[in-house]
Image 1 (tube, rainbow, N blue to C red):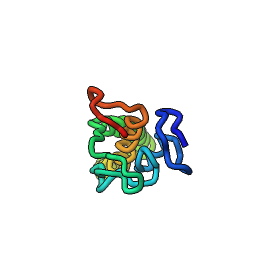
Image 2: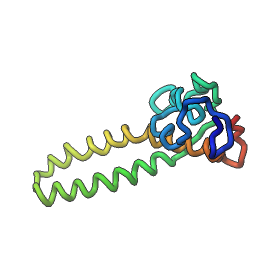
Image 3: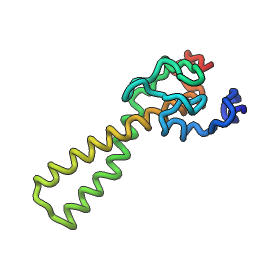
Length: 133
């Protein structure tokens, strides 16, 4: 099957959605092999299709998206809790750091996977120096 966005051949039976492949932290080519070797370390090669992932670099993009997403969710939640429940300050100190840290740890891998998958899909690279296939 040919990927309509890039014109590259993809194995049969795989989704062509770069967004879903990235959010699932799967190889941007086949959608089957894991994208990460450990928590946020990109694997050298896809274990299923052999795509060279060693040159993939998402930079600070995923962290920026995580900051924006958590800001949009956590700040209104904090204000709502303060206005409606008026808890003591120690409740804020106990709840919100855990929510922010937990949310950041949960969102970073899918956001990094999304950035890498979109870079692969559009063949984006710094100075055009990455050969994707």
